[in-house]
Length: 456
Image (cartoon, rainbow, N blue to C red; front, side, top):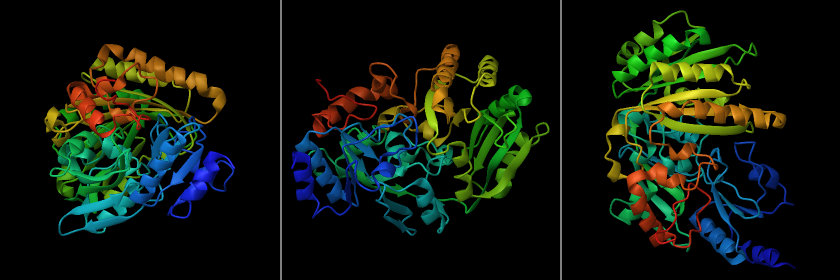
């Protein structure tokens, strides 16, 4: 009997979840993440049910000297939720949630997806800033930032985090909040999975919905330049209640027609929402107009079909200094050369509360107003790997004259240079390295946008 088998047999009687090896039923499905381009085979997958299982999985990995990856929703485009030949700590079975409507809070385990959390909170007409794709996991998105439809009004997902139960590399289980391990609490709000495993997260909730003003409007790409200028004008005077995202995409009807679209979400009154999107709806003759009253839960699924599970993905993203006419022209020209109907370019507007939080208040340094551009290359045929990744890289290169200094942690791939964390965290990086030294001095959690311990 080899040492791994012996160790697993010793652990199995007390482990509440599943311990899967490559020959086990369920392994093939459990090892796969959202991005089909990622094809790694962990030696062991620990499908956990709680903090005790996470601690046991960490002990197992340390005993067997295995690299550790932590999977929540599995959406990370760089595939950081899995590891070749190591141990995947899989939180996806951890679905527990408790909503306290009078306190306006929710506690959710680390494997919960945003569509699941929204469903529970919307029963009480409450919500918190969550992912714009509903199948994204709450933990990974929150720890790295948390772009969502409510961020101009209520901040990023991490700004709504009240506390977290964190399992450290040495298997200690700590509460992190403003009064307990405050340095750790500061660090996990933007520092990703560098410091431990988030077994559960507690969020502040806000009165939202159940019906908001939202939805999508789309025009032929020939009208994209004028549409994006109108988008820019509306963004410059947008109230905090209004979140706007523009994009270039291919019509899903199989026609191959390229489109320019805007998605809106207004979390105030329906009358105010109707007024807020009037200038967008009054433009031209849209190919599709599905913007108006919509259930908040439906708003959070609008983009799901555009990000199919298993598609091959390669992304680049960066903040623009401004959405200038020349930048708009470049974006459109690049998209017209896009080789895959699944690919898109997304322009996310940042303003309001998410941009007003002082940079030093949380680990997240992306506290500015403006436009974040994500070049989302997606395709199905592995024979197109080179042409589709090249299109993404070429588009990113064409945008260089317009790029600012800031990048969003959750969009970073694995080929971003020597120390992408230093770029992403800017003035907060030195403090993060000190906290990393305190809580994970051996850099056990390094399958991420890695913050190296101070002194290393």
